[in-house]
Image (cartoon, rainbow, N blue to C red):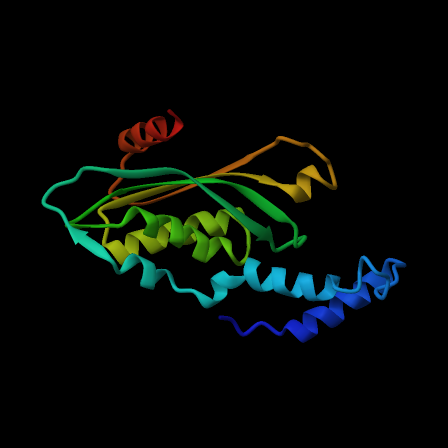
Length: 185
């Protein structure tokens, strides 16, 4: 599944527990290093997955002006604080002659979300993957996320959200505004 070094993670978690004054051998914490190692294997599984695999299952189409899959939920880990951020991603693309199965768009989101990330990079990576692998005429990806590094610590602004979007290919300003309006409905 992955090349993650679970032993190293377990040692680091044990050291972290000791550093904050906890006893890693106490009943409630004795299995915590193992649980955290398993969690990181799951949360970073995108490093060991390939979007090309998911986006290679396509179907021929004769016509199609626009495909939108909206509100794909995701969670990821902020690379600055190793804290979660989560939200929704919407993908719109103008197919050339092929479309991809809708579940494959959600799987593509997971490939990139399951890595240490920045929201801006996540949005760009998804747009690039759709544009390049589907040879789409145009792509727009909108990401709306809440970052726990802002809500659970630091400025503690619960409910604040960050919006990012990326556009690739043949989507002019008018088309972009129309797509964003459809996504927001």
